[in-house]
Image (cartoon, rainbow over the protein chains, first blue to last red):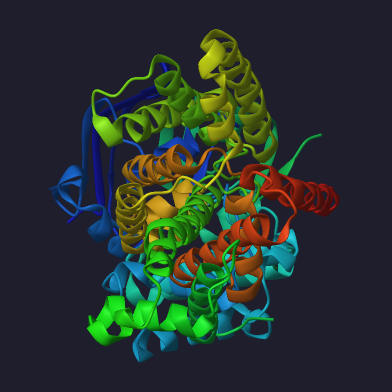
Length: 258
Length: 341
């Protein structure tokens, strides 16, 4: 069964069309890299997946059922999101923010149980946030905050993980580390991952499949080796590039002509 | 440094109880604490012999004059503090409160209208109802003014609140001008006072504040999530649009009822959540009850101060603005320095 099925999806905002003619079947268990120029509708498309926004036209199915038939709570048990525009204006402790990732699984007035705490502890240990657990999020640096937000989505422990430029403000070490955690989980539990990247090389290294967006449409999609070609990069981004397999990185890599 | 919520709740609870008993005893006619105790004890247990020991005048002073006033001050303080917590959490803005967002001015505008035309078609509820409608409309307009593509920016929100408040204040001034000999009613009401509190008004306010508190507590976990931004909250199972509307309307209702009873009392809703957040952290399940008690204690203390200790009774709204205003400046300044990274 498909994880997601989209048919003739159109979405517009205040009269401006943002997404047009989106029809795509997305089998589960893959890591999808979402690439495209700024303003091509990538983030909005993610919003449709998680039903933060609802299209004016077309059908979206999740696991064979219309997405609209799921309650908000059911969706939050199926999909976790690392948004681009997170806010941490209030002095929550890191541990408190991570525990919020367990809210969908807890009745409204219940305190987290031992299983929830175990999950949180495991994620903290894997993401290296243990030493921050009692710190206020307002005191952390931008990159550290993003790691907290990332970890909160991992704590949700869902079959689908949606990353919207989730590593954009991380240093290379932490960025690679978090993405390899995501890949590890994908291999282990067959989770489905959608991730918007600005860095095409990161996408090439971590994604089995690539979906290219341009001007609100899905221009093309397929396995990374199939669609990540100089011709396609020129069509999508209007840049000249060389694509090659790098032995050291053990993945497809791209260099650009400046 | 965080203090355990339970300890804070118990401490504040006892403070409130102590304050109520002390301020009922204090005033132009000094009542011994023991008499106050006996009277309150009589009211609770109904033991007639306690009543017989006391002067009937004392009974009247306690139950008809002071207790309604003291309890109203406490309830209004609680309500304003709760509304402040909700506005700050929902708008992701530690500077929001019913006063800075213009809700208080809006409610005052609606109430002045009622006072000007001496409207009474709904009896006791006319003033609160008009205050609520005007307060809600003002909030909607302020939010509309300050909304940008990227959400609600802190400074825009406060700026819009101030602008709208200024316009409404001009409107209120016009009402005062038009009111001619009735002007004193509006003026005294606007400056805020608990002097004329009565039991029916107290019960109305208390039930509204209690209703609001229940609603806020029910959604307390979702408010925590809203603090992470609306997309994050949505992905954690919160229907953000619906929740925002429910909470903004309820908070405006609570604020407007408080304003309609007591006039404009600024900055309680700003100060209290701030102080309490630094003690308990921003987790709303703790923050809400703690702020409720703290707001009650604080406003009761301020009211008792103006009633019994100052040589002349300074209107409570003036007093809280004189104390709270500089505090607002302090937070604002601190934030300016923090966010310039």
